[in-house]
Image (cartoon, rainbow, N blue to C red; front, side, top):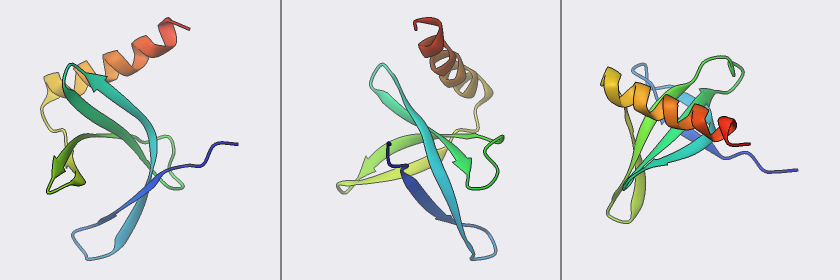
Length: 81
């Protein structure tokens, strides 16, 4: 059984919110994470993964075109199987 990778963010109220990394998608040189809130796996968010000072940081993708491009790439992984 594969271990789930969990990332924790702090919301606007200062509370920790855990997300499961559903998948990592690479498009050219960019890396994106599809994250689902723990307990709400029907929802998913797309974050761009960037390295800052040797640590990974997650930046929410808010641009509709970039978001769609990531989802298309994610979906295409299943078309190849």
